Image (cartoon, rainbow, N blue to C red; front, side, top):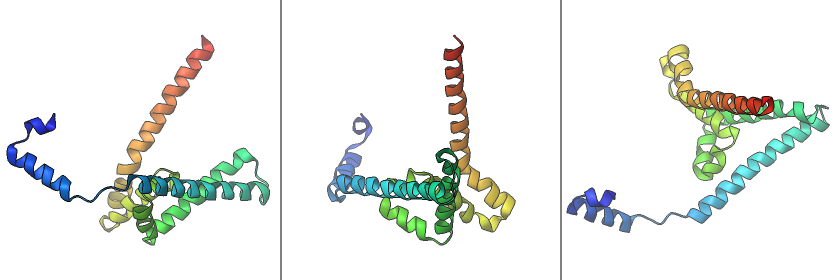
Length: 153
């Protein structure tokens, strides 16, 4: 449908650009993302087991410090410039877990730190986090409301 609106020169350019574009390694990228995301989750499971067996947390209580440690590591690696290089190589495998979200927030904060802590860091880091938090809260409210209505009725 889009190509019908394009002129002859634009269609030729599009065809040329497609012919010289290197092929995308979908399978390799998918496997890499799967393995990296799984490795991050494996590290998280190891941390949770550490909190359960060494520090005697309950399974339920061990979840919060596990996520906190993953976030802290992600933010520290972002601050040192390591996570961005890793994420470039790992692709979606590093973006989907909570570490990817922490990286996005920390990157936005670091990018605007020269503007000051309030105007730069405080406002710009929530450009990424804000929509995610709002969507999460609204989704939780809607799901909770639906569940409540089904249990009441």
